[in-house]
Image (tube, rainbow, N blue to C red; front, side, top):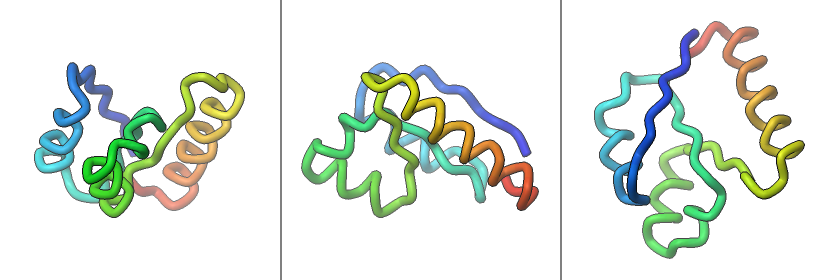
Length: 76
């Protein structure tokens, strides 16, 4: 398993990154994108994991669970 960190500049950049990221990789995005209409729906349907950057403990919990799943199931 590995993690790719991308510093995208706009919300729509995430959609392009989804196309170039290797198969079986799941991007993590800020939760605010979920509420951006069509972009939010597309992100949700593509399996993006959303984190709430305003709630530090919740964000850490989501990332920790994702990391454990990656390790346990040996997925990228």
